[in-house]
Structure formats: structure tokens, C-alpha cells
Amino acid sequence: MVSNIKLIIMKRAITNVIDQINDMLPKVNALEEYVSTYDGGTHPYYIILDKPIEVKNQFVYIHENKAEYCYGFEKRYNTNNDWQLEELMYHLRLIKKEFKKATI
Image 1 (cartoon, rainbow, N blue to C red):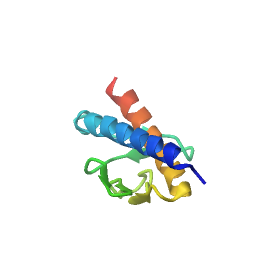
Image 2: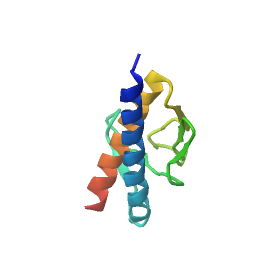
Image 3: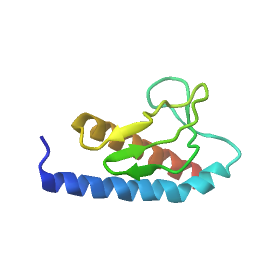
């Protein structure tokens, strides 16, 4: 179980990463090609976000295009659930990394 102080710090880190991703989203959407990653397979998976990532209470919503060959993020992550929190942080870092590569 994660202590309350660590949980508050993690949640602050999550909101910081979400803000950075949402700031990059207009630049990424303006690109001619979709952002892709090879994480999870030998074929490219596209990261296509329809809307900015939202935070409502303890839930984080990633609105991804559900086209074929998209990465397949969960729609909603509960930050009070340790397993979903770890999965959320991994996915946010992946999105941020690929967005940075695409916009440089």
C-alpha cells in the first residue's frame, strides 16, 4: 500500500505530465502523420488523442481514437487503485515521450 504523502506527490506528478501532454496536443494534431510507437509489438501502434486528457476527481480519462492499430489505452483510470495508477503513469510517460519525439 502506498502512503498518503507518496500518493499526493504521485498525483501531483500525474497532473504535471498531463498538463505537458495537453500543451503538446495541438502541435501533434497539426502534424501530417500520426504519432506511433513500437511499444507492445513489432508493428507500429498509433497514438491518436481525440481530446485533451481530463482529470475528474480521482479518475483520469484518455480519449483515444479507437481506429485499427491504435495503442489501446483504457478510457478511465482510477488513481486510488495501485495497479491502475502504475498503468496510468506508464501510459502517460509513453505518450509524452512519443509526442516529444514527434514535435522536435
